[in-house]
Image (tube, rainbow, N blue to C red; front, side, top):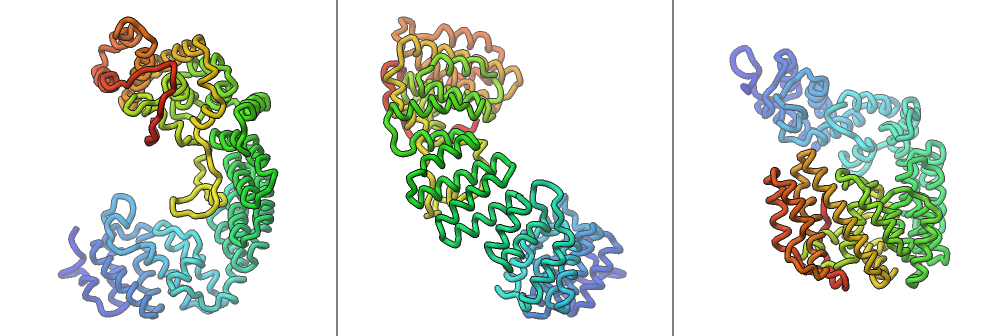
Length: 510
């Protein structure tokens, strides 16, 4: 792209000495409909320099001259979608400094209206999670005249921040943050109870937790679980209540874990409740039976897993065998859980075996219905998070504590392996029928796993008639044949008598 310079054009922005030059450059760019990104970079850097020097009037004029027409689409920089693609300056920093300049150059009584207008002008160029917080950062950590500005800012936002859905709008979030600054925890609680927005309720819980009062934290999380209508959020608040009870050392902490499981069933919550209070094998099986009786969920994988724990292998096998060949990554599909559960029960997970790969999901259960990403009381956090957390036993821990393997009969082993073969066949037919090459490897691993287990049945032949028939039937799919060859070649020893050892590896993403 050529620059707007030369005869009849505008000199490069880098050579401009004052605001008038930048404004003339911006006007010429609007008339032409485009500008060279490098020249715009130079102009915006002058605005940043003015802002850092405290010359807010110049910064305001420079940013307004360029950011507004860029936001309106009057100046094209040659980008495909976002201006950041072609600019080297931080556009969010520029927009934030523009807001700071507007704030500093506007009389106190007009700042709230001016700030809302400036944000609207820069719409599309940047996203402001909390304008006041970002203004403070741009101005070095302090916001002049905050005590006078905050009430006016709240009053201005209240004009627009009207609830329109169960989710918090941008201006409702700004209003909640402002009220939190002015009124503290009490203000956040008022907003949470009034709006019932999950985000507002979470902000209240965060503030109560930060205050360090465990009893109040427990009450806040329990109240929050009753306030929200979203099941995913409710489950997270129930988790928070369970952890708060655990931190307080309350004797009823296990009942909070049960409430979380019943309130928003998931594999993670089930495992936590099953292991609450270091139960014996008999107690864990009794809890699993009561969970089946209470029937808080119809999810096939959870019901099937409970069937396994209470020793009803046939019912679990039926759920696996009847499941469709596609949709294994869905939370409703039992395959990702029951297939590796049966594989581990029948033959363990020897290092290097196909079963070891499939058993990875049993080591650290992953719940799509738990994937809200909310940091409930430190429950979900980074490795650096040293706060209290709810521990989650593994699926294998549950299978071992329930002594499922010791109780398996020869007939049940056969039923489980037959169900695994049916599931592997359906998975193969499903991915081949839809040409889903990405999942050929997964289907092949299921087949190889079944062959591994057959290898331990004492079969006289060294080959699997079932696998050979499936291989012949799918011979017109060379990519699948190739995917099948590798796991069959490296399959580990099969054993239906001893689960053996299992190895800790990463999760399967299929």
